[in-house]
Length: 181
Image 1 (cartoon, rainbow, N blue to C red):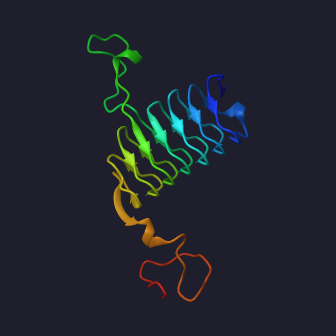
Image 2 (cartoon, helix red, strand yellow; image 1 turned 120 degrees about the vertical axis):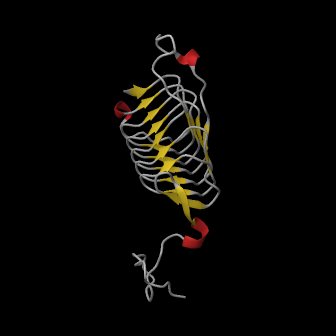
Image 3 (spheres, rainbow, N blue to C red; image 1 turned 135 degrees about the horizontal axis):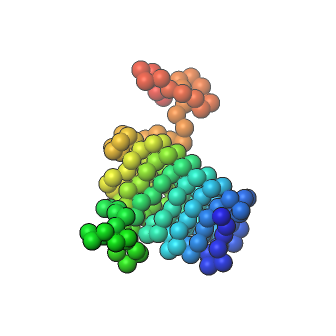
């Protein structure tokens, strides 16, 4: 694995283990951090100040805007109907399929082991829960979770972190517990 010579790296890109990544023909924006065992394919674009956690797979056709968090093991796809062979049994080549583009807008966060199917847009500041399978567009600020991913909230209503009643420290709010004023 490696960082190929045709990769365009912005200033201050951090790749602490360059021998443990596979980056080729892609663009990585200024100040972005790339974890170990990440693959970013040709023509993929990652914006500035993003964090791409270990074991993520970002394929051709994916555009990730600035300040996006991509959790461990997140996978993107770029083909809605993948096949190994053509109808006549010959192996498919790059010429036998069309890349379906996917876009992740600014400040979105994608949780660990989420799968993002081809052709969707994840909205600005949206939050995709760990393990979700995103099969359709996610609106700006939406929180989605599940298989398939469904809207379960709005990030603007959550604040930075939930706080239990009577404390100024972040913590867990039980399901039946009411929020303090």
